Figure 1 (cartoon, rainbow, N blue to C red):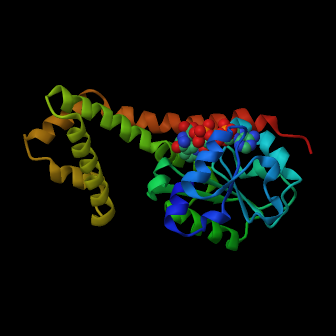
Figure 2 (cartoon, protein in one colour):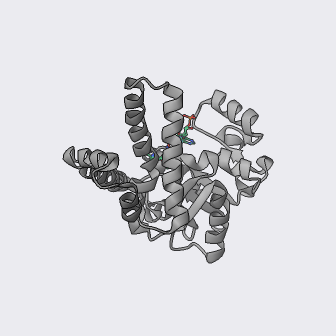
Figure 3 (cartoon, rainbow, N blue to C red):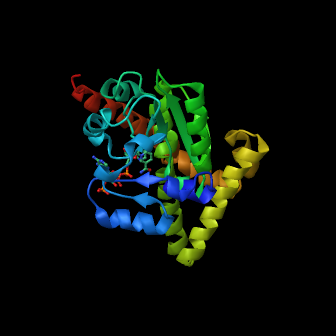
Length: 262
Ligand SMILES: NC(=O)C1=CN([C@@H]2O[C@H](COP(=O)(O)OP(=O)(O)OC[C@H]3O[C@@H](n4cnc5c(N)ncnc54)[C@H](OP(=O)(O)O)[C@@H]3O)[C@@H](O)[C@H]2O)C=CC1
Ligand SMILES: O=C(O)[C@@H]1CCC=N1
């Protein structure tokens, strides 16, 4: 996220403050790579923060919200990328009236090609949403969604890049097994996926129509697709998305049971 935001020039690196749990070497690396301000939590200028982005593991959410509760005030927007952590949970564990926004980016943020979802909390204003959208659009496309769709969005887009990498790993292996240079195979597959994605975005056609356009009767693609059907490729893909979405729901159930009493 830092990489995408800094690259876009939408925010000056010197206005970004970053902290973590304890890894000082990582903070030094971030500071020298991006020119941002990296520091231990105790040194953060909390009163000057407009937007506080939380990006630790979901299980750390309760502790971090508790620590932030008395440091932030309503007006400062808390943005969370944590899978499975709801806006309600954040609101319950922060000051009354604190504005929160739940977001789900993916790792393509690094090259400003993320598909990122945002869902506001109950105290969030239109201006807050615009500010968050504006910032996150520096790392790719932003979709405003109902929070109840955040689990399925996570299954599709948050985790999504991993499915394509997995697919590429398998395609690359077959290329290698057939004598192709590994790097060239990788480049060919990446260009093929990029082209297919761009066709969807630019041609305003459904994947089904585009698939049929590739498929000559009794040709090579028909043969490949038959194998995908025979080995339940479609079911495997649907199951991957469903399982990831269900895990997001499960994280929510596991962690929202640890509400901090106010
Ligand atoms: N990876 C992905 O593609 C995506 C991840 N997410 C979400 O992002 C979050 C982070 O995932 P990921 O980057 O893989 O995790 P990592 O473990 O790589 O990073 C977590 C970071 O949080 C820091 N941290 C942990 N506890 C605290 C704390 N109490 N106060 C301050 N900082 C803390 C860690 O500090 P230290 O450096 O000291 O260890 C570390 O830098 C998760 O909630 C995940 O659901 C969302 C969308 C996509
Ligand atoms: O795997 C995870 O839990 C995180 C959330 C979405 C992508 N990575």
